[in-house]
Image: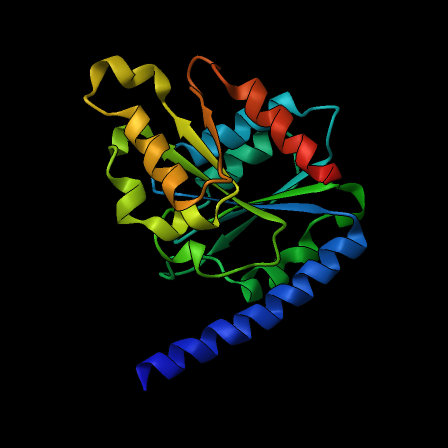
Length: 215
C-alpha cells in the first residue's frame, strides 16, 4: 500500500512538473534544478555564477530551504530577483511549490531560472519541478564514496560540479574515483572541478551553463 501511495505522489508531481515546463517554455526560460548536500557550496556557486553571467544572461533564482532566508538574502545582494521557499520540514522542492511562487518573479524579464533545491542527496533527484536540466554540486570534503552511495543524484544530473578543489591537499579524497564512479553511473555527465574560494574553474562552468540555453 505504501508503494502505491508513493507512486501516486510521484505521478501527481510529474503532471504539475509538465505544466511548469510548459509555462517556462512559453516564457522563454531555461531552468536549472541545482542540487547537493548542505554545505556543498550551492549558494556560493550561485553567487559566482551570477557574477560571471552578468550581461550575458537574465537570471532569476528560487531558493529552497527547510527554514530561514539567509541564502535568498545573499542572492538578493547579488542583484538578481529571488524568491525563498521554506518547506517547513520537507527535504526537497516539488513542482507544486515552484508553481506557487512563479508569480513573484518577473519571468518576462528573465531568460534563465536557477532553482537551488533543499540540501539533500536523496529526494531532490526524485521530484521533477519542470526544469530543463538538473545539476549537482559535490564538495570534495564529502568524500569519494558519494556517487555509489547516492547513485540517482549522479544519474539524473547533466553536470557535476566538484567544489572546494583547493582543499584537495588537506584531505585524502580520491578525485579520480569520484569522476570514475560518476561516469560509470552516467557516462554523459559533464564534470567541472572548481573552487568558489579561488575562482578556479568557475569560468568554464558558467560558460557551459549559459551555452545550454541555446540547446
